View 1 (tube, one colour):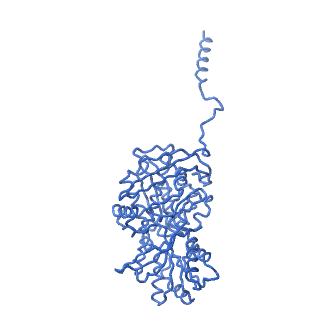
View 2 (view 1 turned 135 degrees about the vertical axis):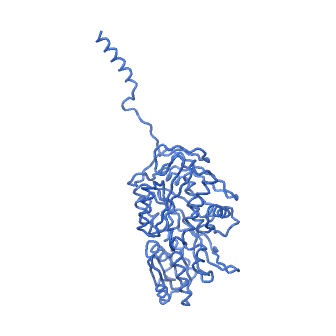
View 3 (view 1 turned 90 degrees about the vertical axis):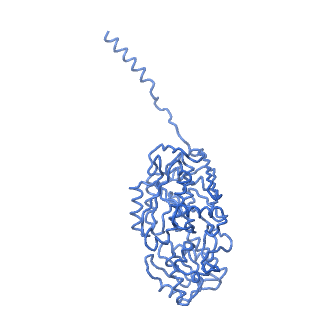
Length: 470
């Protein structure tokens, strides 16, 4: 009887275990090579400004979120974006993504002269995120939390600021990190960690030069070398025979512009006869201006930011010397008139790629004014427009990957969304196309000149056609 009972028990156990998974059974896979993403985002803003981003693309090899930052071909899913009311679920735990929040971060100069100079850019980013939270319910059913750490425009401080954001604050992505030297100190770290490093607020050539090596970093500002080449070509076409001088910040920023100018000049028409560098920490650049003057320079290209650029123009005027100044696009904001009078600035040439804040008849510009008035203590401005563009592109890309809120999903969404993208605040014809092999968002610009209005105020005005870098 005992043996019969044991046999019966063994038979029951055998039947129960027989329903398990068979050895060698295939597991479900997702094949990226055959998947197609259709991303459609439509956001209707007040004052009739409408932003629509529509893209259909088959993503190619893109960066993985591994620490090695080696791009692979990830799985993709079909996404159709509609305004999210209920938070979408996240299949895996991702830093910076909670059921109610998307946490983003940035490093910026918040104090001192640099902080005052570039505050409008940061305020443009913050105001747009506040607008999206208040009027659109956030994105993907979540509120955007934007954390900013002060780096004082200093590389060493930028390292500590970004490590805090990534390791302590657990941000999902870095948005709009400011400054060539400061960001140079952190971008390799961000790529090693697999952190999306979006819309870098610097035009250093290196940001987009090796996208396969730095797959997580994308620049929003135009390439300084391309800008310098435009300046050089303009000089040879309009001031043949004039002696050229370059005043440049002694880092990648200044060096890129210097290289670009030489590439753009026609050597049969113009020569660079004086090159004067200065450190970003310099209090005065008076000696450099004196050297340019003594070298017989007739046109000066300034690879400098507002405080030193305005100082150069004022010092030249003080010395009774009035060359033609062409200054980097980072100066193309009315903030310059806080450092130098419109009368001293008159005739100075710069570049831009966006609609100007004075074009209030344009619906997108009018909406920018409304957003700044409602959500910031900073007035609307050309710098603030750049900040709003970075925030808008971030929200658009996030909205197109609500079902895949991962860092890899965000990068996939960027490549799918920004194909022949005409931003509402970009000049018509300035198109953005991004891919795993193209990380330069802005590749065309237009020349502009500082003028004086009848009531004595300064005003930037466009002239000529849009000039592509390629």
